Length: 313
Ligand code: CP
Ligand code: NVA
Image (cartoon, rainbow, N blue to C red):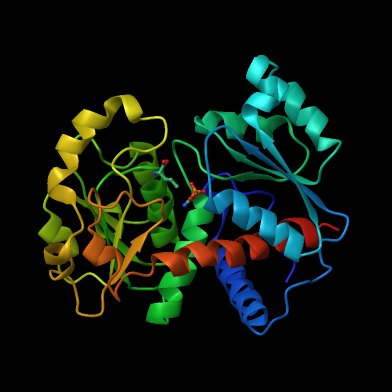
């Protein structure tokens, strides 16, 4: 299948069919890798640039390994080592980089930085996390859920904690794949209003697709999946004390896990702040799939890169 995917700035750039194709290809790639087949020449001569305005372990390494294993190359760039850090405009940076490399992944504070870059770039742009979204994470999350539940449609997901960037993209992914998401968060920490409006504009009933609850039990009872993330995302450090207070009642601990279905899977995009949003016991329990999620970043991003770079070759 020739994909129409041109880049990935928001999860809403993808259709349900695009996501299904990425997950299917990712599953094949994972199987091949498990069988010892790592090197493929598909992206020979292709170069991916990685631009980081903030730290990363999984995103950086999984994109680098994905390109290397597909036969391509990577140039990893820190924001402050580029002229961007000294005030060069996004416009000229995007125009110049487009003449050197074949695609770029950007992790930036402001989502608008990535949108601006894409406006002026003539190469595919991938969002490696912004203050608004983390669509690459959602692809890996959907793959992980499908592996465990054998389906996505109808799966009930409970998000517990901050309605942040990871949550915003997960909302889009759940809506597109026909899943139900309940978000338990304190007042003032809801997911982005524009994400909810987007769901409605696509014709989904936002009440049944994503329901905001204050009560953790209401969100978690009957859930197939419990998902949480850090209380203090990158860039929000100044608000740490207020956030720790607000999220105290939203920790995913053993008693919260016991409110869900017996076969509930516990998810976290990582990095985990143990003892804050998740207890050590839950993290190490057999319900936790967080290492599989992290591994699936590699497989889903390989599938994404093939659809962005191979089909256009
Ligand atoms: N989940 C995730 O994006 O992790 P990193 O911040 O380590 O890239
Ligand atoms: N919400 C977190 C996710 C990190 C992968 C952050 O933005 O810091």
